[in-house]
Length: 106
Image (cartoon, rainbow, N blue to C red):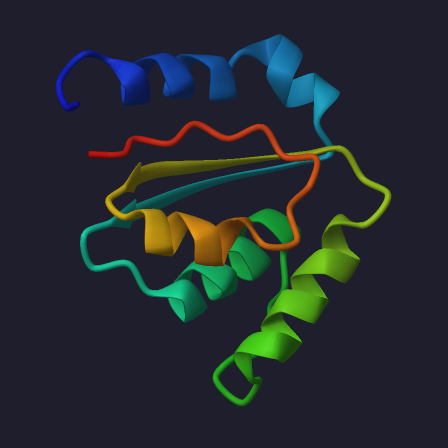
């Protein structure tokens, strides 16, 4: 269901000062039709957590572990925008029990 302003609304909330001050970590991911789980993990680690090291030497499981350790005991908001399949969503949401997420699904 495109074009009704879901992403615009989510962006407005994401940048709202009360949201910014409430969460320790915030991450915005645009998944798109060419969803790549590994790239999503790497983007979150670099942009939201602030990891500076090269990530191409790590397995997906290592990246997941690193991300979960970086988020542990912190208040975080991860927005996944423009995700196109339930399979991609199911793969992504594993391990994220306390996340507030906006999902655009067709």
